[in-house]
Amino acid sequence: MSEDRLWKFSRPEWLNSVWARNSGVYAAGGLFSLAFYILLDSAVWSKSALNASTIHVTFVDWLPFIFSSLGMLIINSVEKARLSADSFSYSGSGVAWKARVVLFLGFAALAGGMAGGVTVFVLKFVVPGSAFPAMTMGVENVVANALVGVSSVVLWVSQNMEDEYSYNLAL
Amino acid sequence: MPTAGLKTIIALSFVLAVGFLLVILSCALWHSYYPLLVVATYVLAPVPNWICSHCANPDDFVESSGAAVLDLGRFCTGFMVVMGIALPVLLAHSNIISIPAMVMSVIGGLLIYGTIISFTMFFQEEQEF
Image (cartoon, rainbow over all chains, first blue to last red; front, side):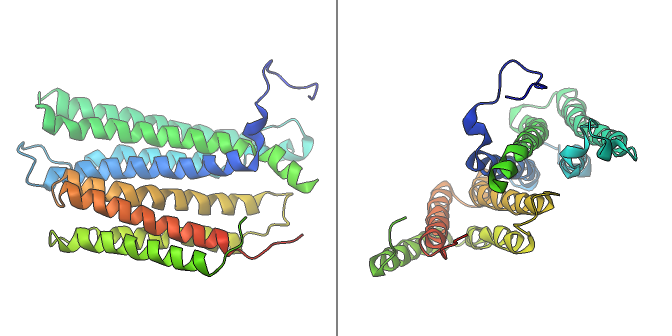
């Protein structure tokens, strides 16, 4: 245990294994796929014969998902090691500051996508008072954006296991 | 790892044939050929992993960019595997294929993917450092 650790509880040992890390990345891909196909399901269902209502999925319904995915892409493209500005070599040219700005933009896009999903759900489905089979399209929109958020959290956490992982391999 | 012999090959090819049989039956019995997409998905699923493992430099631990490429491959593979299950469910939900066709194509797809995975596990080249 190093002295500069902040938290009382350390991560459990199994969380640092290569196996847990890889399965976390696989799970993130699976969750993102689930989000995409839930949204695609609402679009396909909207055009199928089962949809008796006049509400249809348009580009507006896809927009929150596009923003969420963009946020996820930005968040997980940032090199995590650049965030800790403790060492001089990384903070020298202000890389940590840049990383924080980019990361802020990413989280803003992710949260904006989530909020956009709720907005579409409320404005398009709740306010006109649509009945339940058609309401599913709005619920699926919210669920898809939430799943993108969960997926990026899983990917972030499993990428943060990297330190011990590469250390173990280098030994 | 158990040694892979002739019996393993025969068993794996039998399972693969059963998987293809289920998927093709799920298409042909209802005259709707969308479930064939499942086969394409599962055949393509290990490809991102394979490409990215060749792109990455495994000796590069300093910058950890090699691990990032590997992660991208794993992410895409996870995406494809869930896609193989989500696609028939999606088609069945919109009444494009029937529920029995969905069940058959999901089981067939999982058999095909299981065959591919166990084949690569059994016949992996021994990597000695």
